[in-house]
Length: 115
Length: 114
Image 1 (tube, each protein chain N blue to C red):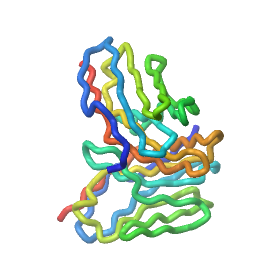
Image 2: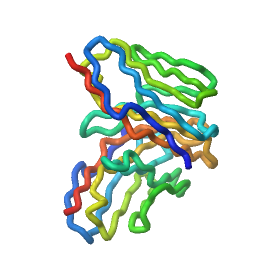
Image 3: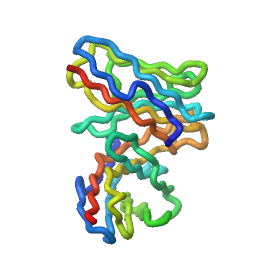
C-alpha cells in the first residue's frame, strides 16, 4: 500500500524560529515530491516541490531536504512568521501511465506560529 | 488565486439526496482531479480525467460519478448521500502529460449532509 507518513501532526513555534515537518514514503516509484500549504477555508496551494535527483531545494524561507536512500523528505521554514500559520501537506507522486499523476498525501501538519 | 474555480462554495442537503459539484480548470489545463477532504481521512484522491477521458480512479464510492465535458469543465455527482459524505471536495487541474505532477487546487465545495 502506498503511504506517505507525515509528522508531527501539529507544531507550535515562536516567531523567528525554524519549523520542521518530516515525511517518509515507501514506494520507490515516487519521483515528485510537492509540499502544499492550506489556510482555513481555502484549497491547498503548491508551496515548493522537489525531484529525487537533488538533495535540497530552497525558495525564500522555505527549503526541502530530500534523502533518497532513507526515503525521507522534510520542509524547513526559516524565520517562521505568524502568516505561515496553516496546515502543510507533503505529497509523493509516481510517474504515471497515460499522463495520470496521482499523488499520495500525508495527513497534514497544523503549524501555529506565535508572535 | 489558483485559476481553478469551483461552485457552489457551500452546499447543505439531506440524506438520500443527489448533488452536483462543478469545477472549471485553469486555462490550458487538460487534467482535472477530484479529492475529498475530511478530518478523519485527510485528502483522498477520487478520480482523474484527462481531456474528457477517465484516466484513474481512487477511493471513489459507486454512488459517486464524474465526467469532464468538451470545454474541459468537470462535474462530480454524489447520489444517495449519507451523513459520512459531509466533507470538503476539491478539484485540481494540471497540464497533464509530461508536465504532470504539479496540481493547482480550487477553493473547494463544503458539503454538509443533514
